[in-house]
Length: 69
Length: 408
Ligand code: HEM
Ligand code: SF4
Image (cartoon, each protein chain N blue to C red):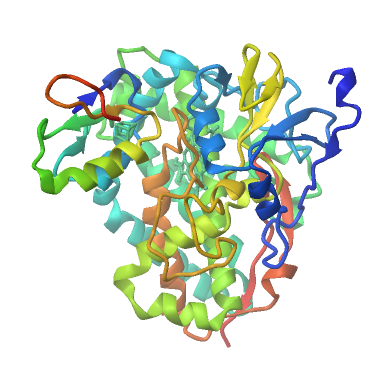
């Protein structure tokens, strides 16, 4: 999972979608990655976060680094 | 306006965006699936988006700039302008925008807002008591919906209790005051000036005596450092963005429930699902854009967008009301209010870098303001049908003018 902090607009959608994987910094509201390689059971929620993030901050890549979405 | 804009159709402005039976021709717009160019009443044309995909793409495309309130002619359905100020994030773009936005974002994060739950309840209870003391009938917009969001913002900013009453009064007049005062067109500008003086005072206080509040944090910001002018601009921004929007939405949601006893019964039957019900109410009526307003963006270069050439200097108007009834996000009878829907991410709070900073706060307030009024006054009834409620022009489009109710 790749996170581009520079684009994060601190909207907190990621944490609402997948609270076990993402958190929001108390200081500036930006994304905090709690789990870089979440278990498969989290995938649907992570995908939801990817779709909801208004600033396209989160992307997914497979082990060889190819971006999936 | 260029020569070829002469034939552009006028935008079907709806001065009463709360009407249930009529709306913008949203489904027709959806079906067209393209940008629709309209002429706004002030003579500036703008491309309105009709789909959720266009809404998201334009609001996340850095070639389109947010330039609100800058006094340059931009498409708007109303004649009221919001003044621009230093520190106003809706007029900033790129990294500068994000840097300033992040200075305030911690205080509006999901966690901070959760911690604010008890405070919100306390403010809501206070205005329930005041409303009850005023007696039935009453204008619930003025007595209840309007003062709550600004008092909560005052708390977040750290406005001391010695200044709250004046802050509240000024907040009330930034939106043109209440019906009896509307004849005074200078009231909003005067209120902004009062706020300026008051906040300047508070900023000085906080520099001397730092507290655990947003204004103190802003005075200590280093990346970037904010001047006093920018701090008061940002604070005024937070007030203006969160005050009229939340109160109008709260009043409108109460009005719909009063109008539809079956929906109200469903709403009140399951307290655990109230957050979901609020989402559906927010989706169903994106009041701001259902008037014909949009979320204005300026093309900073020529942009070829799905076969339409948007020229540099032209405006696009992403429309949340149209996006929210797009079948791709809400597949079944999207123009109907249906509390039973699985909640889905609607676009009432915008998208992209400027996505509503106060959305978690707005939700936290609505989920208390709306049910609590029915708890306190089980016999609450509206004096008017939803469709007849009066609306007023405001800096953001339209706001509810009053919500006359009785409980006896
Ligand atoms: C139901 C109530 C609300 C609605 C429907 C709403 C809607 C919106 C929308 C659509 C935007 C995007 C504007 C744009 O892209 O140019 C926005 C921005 C904003 N909202 Fe809200 N809002 C609400 C409540 C609040 C509250 C309670 C606050 C709290 C202070 C707030 C603070 C802001 C701020 C600061 C921005 C500007 C963000 C930026 O430019 O980066 N809003 N709001
Ligand atoms: S949803 Fe996107 S923009 Fe919002 S906090 Fe998460 S990563 Fe940042």
